[in-house]
Image (tube, rainbow, N blue to C red; front, side, top):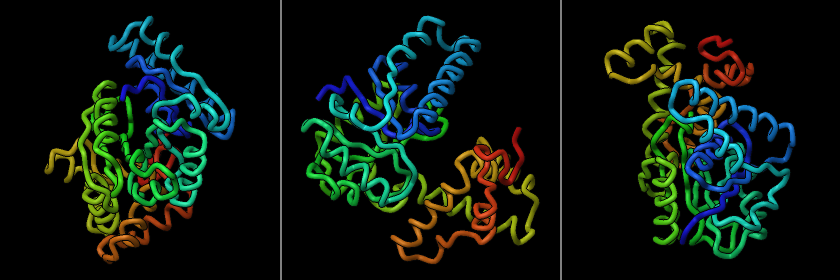
Length: 283
């Protein structure tokens, strides 16, 4: 199937990034949220991101203006009625996502694919909340969406080949590289990444090294673009905690037990870049 109209549900960091890359590739997008304030903030962020790209010579003023013109905003999810694909990008909570998928299944046309940007929650469980489990798929973008090339395409137990193929085709259309994986907790990306981040936090808690030392070892020694503590701040410490809890619960293995320091920092509201303070402090 050809996907020409997309609805993105959730105007947070990931939702606005997804809407931007879709629009930059000529896809008509409606970005939805429960609050008008969130939509206004998202559009301001998208316009600022596009202007930065213009100032760096990556796109023209005309291309930036065209991308903005292709994004509509709407409170509520009614825009799903005219969409070929709906991408859910709300909080990483199973019950909240299932409720959204139940609503989308009722609203979206019969041919529409329902995708989730979840980083760890079961696609099969979300699909079971709908009457179209063969048309439910994971479409896991990475932050920051405009800069990161990977999209993890997650095939649930009932997801059809046609749904996976259409999702991969759209990912390629917007300049991303789709990689198909099966529906297991954390998929591939976070099942490998989160234990590393968690162990880095244990190293900090136990005094093995300073935050700078831990990050520098991984940056220089393993050739990672940034260290695991700086990366955790970028992802969001609350998101890291949520993913580790999913891994521990669904795989039943104590090796995924979140570090107590991570829990403590989330409880204190030190969530990383988005709160201005995590393992590092941000302006």
